[in-house]
Amino acid sequence: MKIVIKIPEDAYDYLINTSFKKAPKIMFNQSAKDGKHTTKLFDVIDAIKNGTPLPKGHGRLIDADRLKIDNPLYLSLDIPYVTEDTVEEIIDHAPTILEADKEGNTDADSD
Image 1 (cartoon, rainbow, N blue to C red):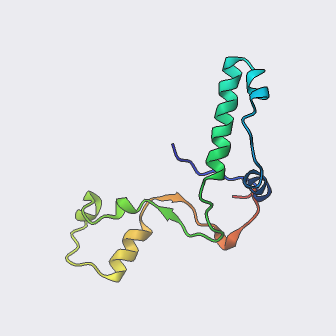
Image 2: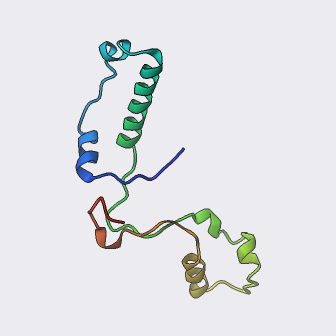
């Protein structure tokens, strides 16, 4: 599963710059069920540390595969040839996955 999450920059910096150890002392003092939950927490921390941050001021994110010319939606438009305006219109009407980061807003609590 892939998700996009929004976390405060200082929390992200802390995660990236901190070494988290799966300490046996901690792991073995838990029930088997709690130990599995702790392991999953480490998996989440690793996923965040290994993730790719979106750059500040990024544009609107869309699914480029849905723009392929053989998509039935575009075939139904009966476009005789492709122009720059046609391409821009197709991109403008592509479903948005994630809105653009307007002006590199760094406030982690705003949308």
